[in-house]
Length: 214
Image (cartoon, rainbow, N blue to C red; front, side, top):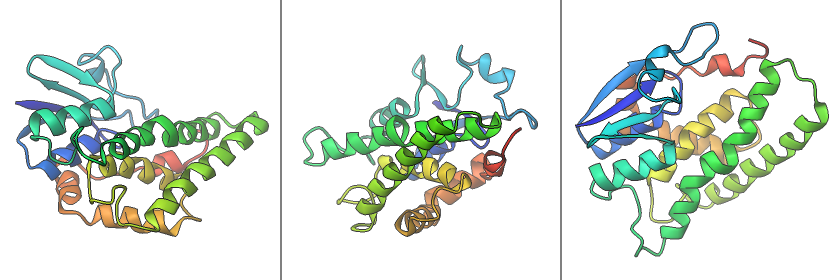
C-alpha cells in the first residue's frame, strides 16, 4: 500500500489531496511541526535523511520531491489519471505547469518568508524578488483569465501542485492584485477531493507564515 508522510501546514497537503482526487487507497502518517519554530519533527528525520514532507513509501521505495511524487502516484497508483500521457498534445504544457510551482513560483515566495522571519536586511535583494514574484503571478493570472484550469482540457495534477503554492502566496499577501488567481484558488477549495483531504489530513493553517520575525 502507498504510505504518505504528511506534515501539517506543508507541501504534503498536495499529496493527500491528490490521493483523494484519485480515489486511491493509502496509509496516512501524520507529523506535527514544532509549534514555535515551525521546524519538522524528529519523526520525519527517521523516515528520510532530509526530514522533509512530502515523503512517500511504495513498493520498497522511499520517494521525496513533490513533482516526482505527483507523477509517481498518478501513473503508478492512479493508472495515469490526472496526469497527461506523452502522446497527448498537452504533455508539454502539463510538464511545464507541473514544474512551474516549485521551480519558478515558490522560490521567490520562500525568499520573501525568510526575509521577513530574519528581520530583513538587504532591501535591494528583496526588491529584485518583489519584481519576480509579481511577474510570476501575472503570468499565471493571464492564463487563468482565459480558462478554469491550467490546461485547456481541464483539471490535472498540475492544478494540485500549484494550488498549495497559491495558498502560501495568499498567506504572504501576494494575491491582492490578482483576482483570477483568487477565484481559481476558491474553485480548487470547493472540490470534493480538496475537502476530503482537509478532513483526513487536517486543516490548513498557514497564518504563521504570514508573520514577520519568528
